[in-house]
Structures are given as C-alpha cells and as structure tokens.
Length: 272
Image (cartoon, rainbow, N blue to C red; front, side, top):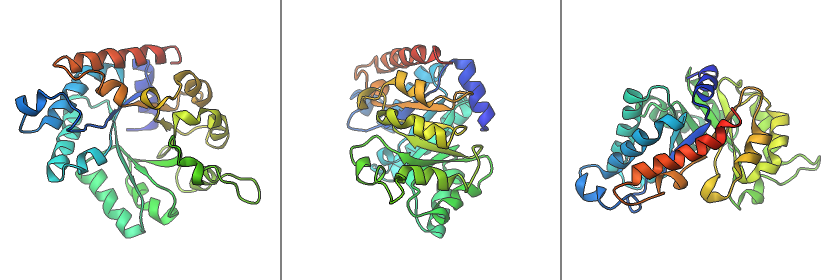
C-alpha cells in the first residue's frame, strides 16, 4: 500500500485509527475457547475485524501474543492476515515485531514477516544501525516503522538522553534514519504519551507517517496527538488495542468493540 492510498483511505473513512490485535488467549471471551476450540484466537480476531473494519484503516497484530502460543499462534496469525487480505483489502496490516539484528539475521526476519506472513509494514528497532534496518527496506511496496520515541517509562533511560551538543537520542535516530529511505517507505513510532514532543518530531520528519500507540488504556490524549502530530495530509496512524478489543468479555464482545471503535472514529472525524 502506498502513502497516497493510506491518505485516501483515511480521508474516505474520516479515520486514522489502527486497531491493535493483542489477542491474549487468557483474556479473550471464555465462550470462544469452547465454541471455537480449534482456533479461538483466530475466531476472536475475525469477530473483532468484522465488527470494526468500517471504522479503522489499519490493524496491528503484536507478534508476542502469537509467539507465546508456539506453532499454533503463528498459524492463528497467518490466518488472520490472510482473512484481512481476502475480505478487507483496503486495510493496512502492521506486524508489530520490533525486530533488529545484524544484517543477515534481519534479512531472515524480513523474509518471514514480508514474504511468509505478508505484512504491509513491520516495526523495527534502529539501535544496531543502518545495516540492521536495510534488509527490511529491500522489499518494494513494504514499509519499515522505526522505533523513535516510545510511551513506556523506560524511554527516559536512553531515548531522551542528550549528547554534548544537546541533541537527544530520539532526534539523532530521526535525522540519521532519514538518510536510509524516503517517506514513501519509512514511518516512525512515537508514543501518544510523548505528545509534548510531537512538535519536535514533526520539525525533523514533517512528511512521514507516524504510528502513535498509547491512547486509551495507556493514557494518551487524542486531541494533543492530532493537534501536534498531524501534517498537511494527515500522516497519523493512531493505535488503540485494549480499549477496543477487551471492552467486553461476554458473547456481545464484538458488538461492544464496534461501539468503542466507532467512538474513536467519530472523535477522529473532526480532524480529517
């Protein structure tokens, strides 16, 4: 999917919502583990997708929630991506993998994520440098979403530290990585709880898409994210996971998830 197609989907749906499929077998509605005992995780994902696809432009499975289940989890993940491809081809599919290693190892990660699982984009750690990221950038039409400024408390440990010239590490990551690819293939993760720094991010990468996790359960503010993070074309994918997919644990879970997704989309419509 191209940058222009993402913009067009956002404008058409009046939404920049990305829904995180952090599907935990221990948290999904208990009736699914019996009624859909062959693959309850996929049954859960399929129901969430069918209920919410009208209101979002992207889905983001977090691979940890599937790897936890071993081979069964990978099968559930593969089935989820295939289901989206076959039924909702306008959805942008992000593999939240946070990979990054020496070049040949990154090449194998990229092959698994882009060829086998067929994601449109993957999240990648930049901290081993250019040669650890380049293998992911070798796939035409695919995207790298580079970790820049995250929402967790530990972000203070490294990302906001300054060098002798006063440049913070996240700023260095943004400036250096711009040399590796254009805004047609490279996005950045910027946590919603770091909204006070979004203006700084936008000064460095004014035209790139930003994936912004952390609204809802993590406390990020949508208004601040939209105010300081949007560029002239939109340029945001704002993720919500638990607030939507775990809004209810009864047999009406998908219906309630739809209501939650609709609320966020309606709030986003004011900015589209």
